[in-house]
Each structure stands twice: as C-alpha cells, then as structure tokens.
Image 1 (tube, rainbow, N blue to C red):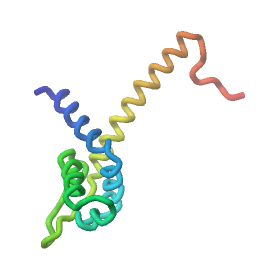
Image 2 (image 1 turned 30 degrees about the horizontal axis):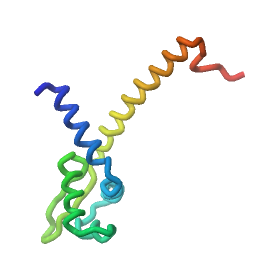
Image 3 (image 1 turned 30 degrees about the vertical axis):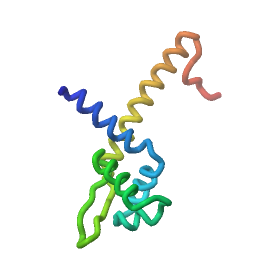
Length: 116
C-alpha cells in the first residue's frame, strides 16, 4: 500500500466517523473534557452498547482515545486528529477556490474586485 493509499484510508475513516451526528456530538463533548463512556451514554436516547459502538468508531479513526480508570473507560478527544480533518477540508477548499478563480478568468470577471 502506498502512502497516498494510506492517506486516503485515513481520510475515509475520519470522515466516516464524523458522518454521524451522534458521533459529532460525542466529539464535541470529549474535546471539551474527558468523559466516561457511561456518562456519555446518559446523554443519548439509545443503549449503552450503541454509544460504545459510536465511541469505538471514533477511536478506530483516531479521533478519541480511551483509558481505563478503575471500572470506567474515560474518553478524550484527540485535537491533532481534528486538526488533520480541518487541514483536509482546507485543502479541498483551496481546490474549489482555484476552480472558481479559473472560471472567473474564463468569463472575464475579476475574482477579487478592488473596493472603491
């Protein structure tokens, strides 16, 4: 597997993990501070096992990590992983802005008109 394939696999895992609203909400919570999985589960109208599965998807994607504290599993968000998602989106935005600028050039429109 090439480095590009690994990068694509990582991007797939990150965006798959963030595609679900419950997982995005879990991420918001664990980025603010560490939470036990049971405390996270109390916030959702679903079983503890379902929340555990959401946490596992986020963990596999590298967006959060868990540690054991006695009988509890504590989850905290991985800021660097979130930054990598933001970086990927910024790269896509750059491509999009480049295409818009080229379209503007083709139709003769100044993409950055000066303010008077």
